[in-house]
Image (cartoon, rainbow, N blue to C red; front, side, top):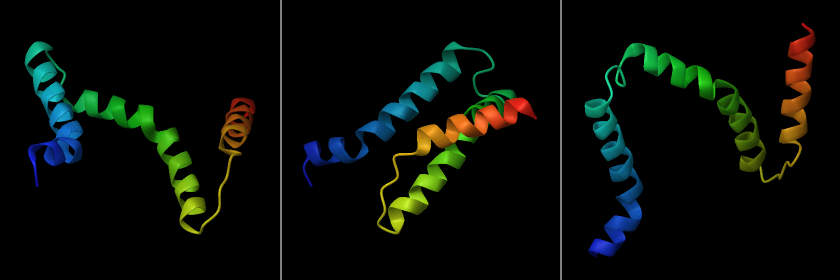
Amino acid sequence: MTLRDYAIRYGFIVLLFGLVAYFAIAADGFVSPQSAVFIFQSVAITGVLALGVTATLVVGGFDLSIGSVATSAMMAAAYV
């Protein structure tokens, strides 16, 4: 493998770890349990929707209704 192949394959992961290391040093409290809880709360809804779309794609289907389903679910949750 050439350096270019490694950069294409692992470049994003190296960049991600570099950013986490930079902000861990630059910002107090960046690497903390409260931060992790906030991140997991932020991506919880998107993660559930992504699992549904993944199941559809795995069986060979293609579903474009995820936006309307998410909007309907949020409206239903707002009424409850």
